[in-house]
Amino acid sequence: MSTGTVAGHAEPAAEPSAGPAVQGPAHAGGALGAVALPPRAERAERAQAAAERLRPAGIDAVAVTWVDNAGIARVKAVPLAGLVHAAEWGIGAAPCFDVFLADDTIVTSRLIGGPTGDLRLYPDLDRLVPLAAQPGWAWAPGERYTQAGTPHPGCQRLFARRMTGAAAERGIGLKAGIEVEWVVALAGEPQEEPRYPTAGPAYGMHRLTDLSDYLRELLRALDAQGLTVLQVHPEYAPGQFEVSLAPEGPVEAADTSVLVRQTIRAVSARHGLRASFAPVVEAGSVGNGGHLHLSLWRDGRNLARGGPGPHGLTAEAEGFLAGVLGALPELLVLGSSSPAGYLRLVPSHWAGAYQCWGLENREAALRLVTGSTGERATAANAEIKCFDATANPYLAVGAVLAAGLAGVDQRLALPPEFSGDPAEAGPGTVPRLPASAAEAIAAYRKSAVLREALGEALYEAVLAVRTAESEQYASATPEQLVAATRWRY
Ligand code: GLU
Ligand code: MG
Image 1 (cartoon, helix red, strand yellow):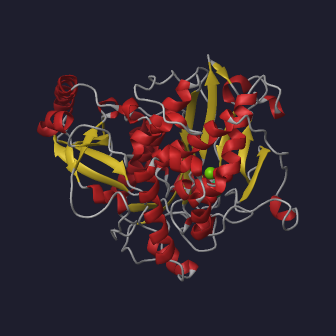
Image 2 (image 1 turned 45 degrees about the horizontal axis):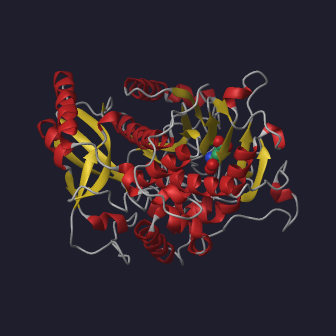
């Protein structure tokens, strides 16, 4: 678990929405005009300048990723000479990617699916960076638009940007960070059980010593890519580690989580290792989380401090957290995508299996972190613990913003906090979060807030993918589900 501290200044407000406000609890989420492409000439000029910078650095190609609704990062790459064209016209990408499952099965949904059509994937040049552990390669996150240049309603990163804009319209800035946990194993065949390069104990210096060069190379690579690491440490499960990064804007934090995992994979491969970000790597053991830290800011002030609410929360921060807490069952569809997530989300595994909140409570799905005396104005934040790395991080942050802003608009209050392990409070005292993908999907189906914020096309594509994966593994044993997902994420 990381400290999840935040820098002492507010996230600059996102550009105000240029599009018409759509009515509803998360109204600005629907404003596609807010995410219009900049002019083509400007994109070309910037890409040209970037290519001139990258060429002498020995970069030959640029990988442009997006994350699909199954939580898998997919990629199209262009040679460096093609970067300007990619920035001007985008890279071809089929719409059916929105209905891929984690095992590459392709399903369909009412508004998205089928073999016809094409989208354009545009690299975000602001995040273009050489990949330190993949010499010759640079990376940029992509966003998808139609051939006519309008935002693709199924684009998850544009959704996250729209929701950040919806917060900015209310004068709320955000800082976010996604903790990355992974299990490192010796490279092997996909069907093989993991064998670990260290037998050291949980949080043990022994593990750090065994993997000293590996972790050093990882830290150097992350640093070379402009990322600020807060800490790295061995975690609880065999071969498990965690790295946490400095907070940044929600979209940037989602990009960072993609880049960090990609970097961990690449560094692992260079050391004859492989990494798993799957929720559970060995049935029955503690899993890999993807905890999301968030703080809200207004005019440079942390909204978790100086207010009349519990532990000094302002009314806005309390409303936001209450909105998130109440929506956690449906948010799990976006924050813990795979049916395998429910093997991790069990009591007394620090995964936050209960729908409650608590100060520094690691068994609560929503953990309030105030930080140390003296540092609280900058450090206070909330951690959503029930999420994992099968989430599409753009969907996860966007959906949390939608639920939180609905809570702000409705001026919701938090229920009493819970201290201690809810598992010991007796059955029924604290509600359990969904115990299966099917239960979470049932909650998602009823969520007007998420439907409104995501828009019909994205909402339904997510539903199609989640439902198909839930049915795919409905009768799988935990061992089968773990084996099917272990090396996919
Ligand atoms: N690995 C735990 C999880 O599944 C989290 C451990 C921690 O609190 O950092 O989320
Ligand atoms: Mg951890």
